[in-house]
Length: 211
Image (cartoon, rainbow, N blue to C red; front, side):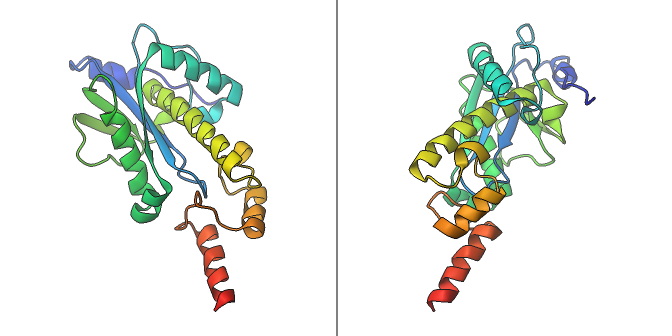
């Protein structure tokens, strides 16, 4: 059974002095549609909700429950990068941008950042470290993964109402078989990432057929 994330990364930083430590994570690198969403979360060491884990390891119901608790007990902020920014910058740079925006939006400035992955956004306002697999290892990053995931899922439900037929309310824009089939049948929407190959290929085919 996979181990649960713990507070050891935060504890090492607390021992050095900084006491506002934000975990940062993003959600939505893989989908064909919708923005990438990041969250920055500062947990209170005395008020960490039990059961925090990588959002991918939780049921939707449990994510919603923990999201509500975190929003009431933690300091947090969200950041996004739009579909247009994803296409212009590439998904990696757009993800880093969303993380940077989440950090900048914190109502109390963080003194140290624990960031999921192996890359740090440029020009951060404080010290930071990258933690590979951080959402499954570090409680603050796990908390950020939950808030970001719930927020992005809600965005995709709203987009599904604007663009019915793609199943975004259940697949969150990921390239499921149903989503790919709908893309071929219904075409590309304004919410699709044109730089992603399945979407780009359909656009290219449309051009080829019309010329």
